[in-house]
Image (cartoon, rainbow, N blue to C red):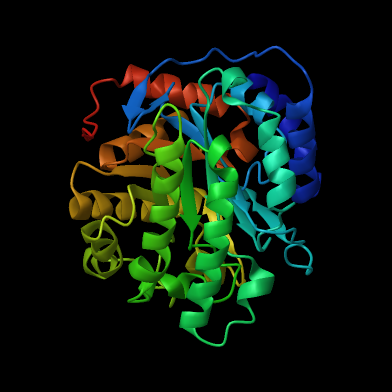
Length: 363
């Protein structure tokens, strides 16, 4: 990461969104990998992760830089959030700010996406046979322009369900797993869905069935995992307690609506604390909350479902903290801004170094 420290003073002078686009452009350029891949295989539900460190959704929303991401040594990556049709995101600027004093990022991007058709073509250009073991997940969510027309939670759920049922089968051939994003603070009403009594029946069960139908036709047969991405707090910006999280998680687990959880998305509570009424905070300030949510989750769901820990991993030791808290895998995003791409390989190597960590066994 010495090289990144050299260029960081220049990068921090660039507008964050522009700097991010430059990073994606650089990852699209043909170049040999300069990072040694840390082999730490993790097997789960027919998938083999070459190590436990991945890149969170939002980094490569449109699957344009997957070959470069593979060369960074990541074990997996979430593409998206993917929408049924293109969306510019929020028009108000700025949409992203760096808070360097705490290694945080604030954003109110609002799901910008090239849309299903373009992203599927990008995924087709990176087939499994050239991925060198990189596991690719598709993070899917409802289109903000469509759900804002909903007049009730039921209408919102129906629109979200119909779009999920379009997205998952269309992306199936290219997705190793799916993540449903009901946790972004930048789409009004989205986090409220988590507290809907009809969530499993009206959204997850139909989606689960659609994915299983695709699995049954796959050769060889598959059992494609479905995960839920959680926010760090409820819709009222109150951090989850074990009891409050139980009301969300227990119905999903009891009805076998999903295979696990990604914890967590950005925090609107922390955004409010710095004077931002909209958007969410990721990076350093989020870590303590994210770790607590992982601990709550592991207590609630036992050892046999997957937890992906995400939020505030800005040095290699932080990934180990998430594993100790109960996650099976970890994801990085904001840490890449402040520490550079070498953070991925360094974090994976640190997990191997601490190979005595107690990692929940999955059946």
